Image (cartoon, rainbow, N blue to C red):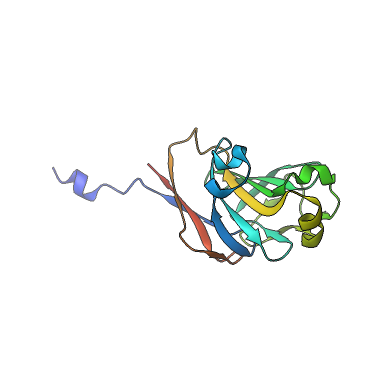
Length: 165
């Protein structure tokens, strides 16, 4: 009779932290329909103030673009996260990017993943905006709450909360 009263809450959550320092923007404002229309998944964007990218979660590096502009992470909570530095940065062929991790590395929140020359990106790419998306957000049973904060501090500001439905 009282079993429902004492049943454990099945909702668990995971916090996702800012991967870079800068100004937080809605993903809908990204000037690329692949991101703004959420074709790759739920997410957000940040206009960077420096050229450092850190892990937003504890997890594992599962993919790095050959051009070093994008890193895929499998979070310990199951979210698959893509961090994409700039728009049309693939054309830079890795110039200005320096990796700090390899595929297969275990990572923790705030751990430096990559550095890049922000001025070079501003001069040679469509945008210096960094986008972070949950690539499996459309195929899992999670709810995503995007922070209303406007300023991101790498490894400190919670930019997204993932909860089981």
